Length: 202
Image (tube, helix red, strand yellow):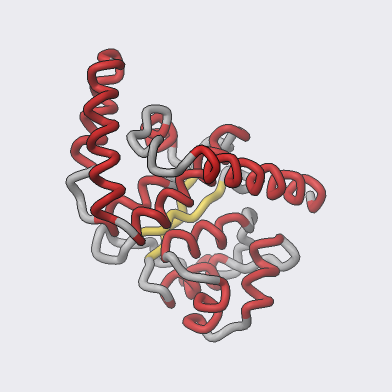
């Protein structure tokens, strides 16, 4: 979430046509957590992203911590260096719960990238149970059924999409059992620390 509701949306280049940002490369990119989301979507370390983009790991760390502000052109270059495309997306500001959900699903996205077959099997099992337990959420659960049949590169961006419909989908996420209770607790602690840092820097 940016101060003005501005986000970039990261996606695999062959899914949809990305926005040409050539004429807006001087705009300031407001939300530094987007660099971390970019990196998580690509499944790379700070060092690997820096190497691919021809910059330094301290620079990537500074972007993620909010000590430096990359332009949209820089974010586009970072995304393209790891095989992602970027487009600008406007949406209502994220709530703290929205941000926490995206943070948690970022970790799930990494697990999906590392162990796709196991994660998808767990999600399918959970989805089946949720359909029986939550008949009122049938439409959203049916959408998850379609999404789970897509390729992993197409599915991963949905997990951290800040858009309104993706937020609604994550309210009934079938990935709830992918992380252990201990892993979830650790992610919540990391998120809380990130929120404290975010507020202290603002």
